[in-house]
Every structure is written in structure tokens, then in C-alpha cells.
Image (cartoon, rainbow, N blue to C red; front, side, top):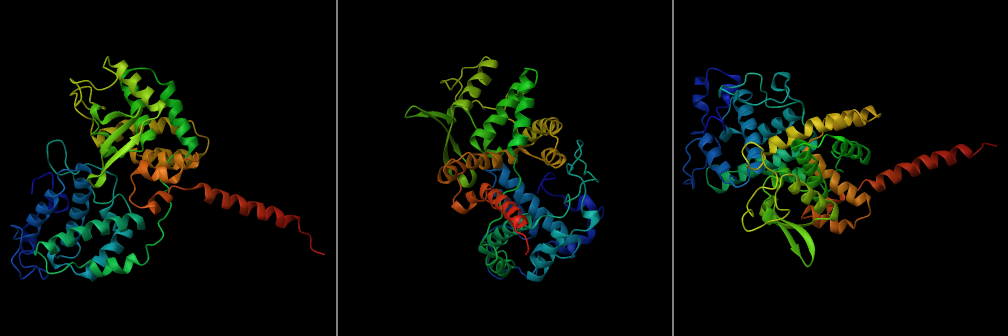
Length: 387
């Protein structure tokens, strides 16, 4: 694998010779059948698995992060190859993610320095993962082991039994909590409207409104070109290919349509697609003209969220807003749509959720009303006098 993808032991360990016997060539879980992939060791198998996701940079990045982190843990904590891991090991890994060692955590940093040397301050974890994040991690690892088993590289999937045990406990999905309240979103809008009109702020405003009024993922946002904005039966739609290679038509309301036209007008561009610009990225770099990256979008949003946090009197809301990322705007979009009374079935289509239960996670109004009712019950209780 390339330096950017692996070189994993370089992050923590200078001497790699101790891992020569942990390549996985003789792993205890290696299949005795003829392998369907040209891999004799675990790292080659990882490379081939990740190659399956080259078409989606976001998915590839997430899968690489989780598998590399597991490989690091396996080598450094268990002194085992990936193809030696068993169910007990993976249960230990689950516990480790919930309560990692201190020297495995640190501020978010790039793995490599600008000179392509490993960044010795990089750590695999920022801190303990939340249970929901651990479940997502295990589902990615499960997909990895399933693929290796189907490829006859591994004899069996060591996560299979754990997955069945946990699936019986996962009927109720927790509500989405990483979203901006209306108060926080109003503060963001205030900064956007009061900022000096220059190319950076005009683009930033349009970026926020595009994310908010469509609820698209950042990975989808960076792929949008002008030809994806279409008029169908006198209504404007955003036609995109999203997660899982699923096509989605997302309504473009008048507010967003006006923002698109204003944004294009500022840069002296035609308001909508023409035969000459159909493949132009909707959001582009001023230097290269190419589409913005996911990382760049989050870099643009961070200062905005910080400035907006200074407008809030509530310290908890202020602190929460500073921690927000671009994906929080997606969550905010669907939460606010439901709060505004939009039919949850329509919100499900806008979000392109396969399951209605996923959309229901964005419903917070009923919980708020339930809490208010409990306060009211307390008021009634106070009026009752003992004889």
C-alpha cells in the first residue's frame, strides 16, 4: 500500500522488524481454500478491499480509517496479525474504543507532515468513542471481514456472532443530537448576512444555504455540477447520486434558487447550466477552479461557527456550536423541516433514508412536549394541599 494509506507502524514505532511475523501469511484464521484474491498477507488484502470503494472518497476515507486503526491495535496491543483475531479479541477492541489508553488519544492531526514524514503527534483517537460510533466502527469491520471470508482469504468472520448478539439490542435508534438549534442557526445566518460582501463570504453563504435547504452530505455537495440542477414540470430539483450509489431528486425552494442565481451572478457566470458549462462544479476553488474538497468545506465553516457562537448568551449552545461540522447542517435541515410541520414522509424522501425509522430520529418536538407536560404535572402537584 502507498505511504499515504498505510505505513501504519511508522506512526508509533520506529523499528518495524518486530512485526515481520505478523504479516498474516500464516494467520490462524486463514482459509485453507484457494483464495479468490491475489493476497498472501493482510496488508495486501486490505489494499484490495479498499480498492472496492475508490468510487466514493468519503466511504473510502472512513473505511481506511477504521481498518488501519484496527490493524494498529492488533499489532501493538495484541501482537497479532489481523488474520489471527478472534471473537474475544474483537470484544476487547470494542471495550478499548469505549475506554482507550491515554497515549492512543490526542487532538485531531494530519497523519503526515508536509514533507511526507510521519507526524509523531498524530494519534488514532481523539478520545473515547460513543456507543453509536463504536457500533458504526464494528459494522465497517464486519463488512471487511465478510469480504475477506467471501474471498476465501479468511476461514470465517470473527465478528459474525457479536453482530447477531448486538442486533437484538438495536431495535430503537437514538435521536440525532448533533444538529443546530434554531437559535444557533439564526446566529449563523446573522453572521452570514452581516459579513462584508467579498468572494469568500458570498461563497460561504451559498455553501451554508445549499447544505441547509437540501440536507445533502458534504461528499455529495462537492460532486454537484450545474447539470445536476434541473427543471421538471416547472419545479426546480437537485438531481444527485448519493450514498450507496442511490439517485435522489431534492426540491430546490425559492430561497435556495435565489441564492444560486445571486451566487452565480456575483461571479459573472450564467445563472444556470448552458452547453458550455454543464460539468462545471457548483462550488469551486478560487485558485484552481476545481471542486472544493470535504476538508476545505469544513475549514471554511469552522470560523463561521466560532463567530456565530459569540452571539449566543447560552454557554452550552455556544460551546456546542463551536464543535459543529458541515454534517451537523444536514441533521439541522431535517430536524427543522420536521419541526416546521413538513410531512415526515416527505422528509424521508428529501433525506433519501431507506428506513422511515432513520428519519424518525430527527423528531424532537414530541420529546419537548413530553418534557413540558412533565413540568405542568409538577405545577398541578403543587396546588394539591394535604388535609
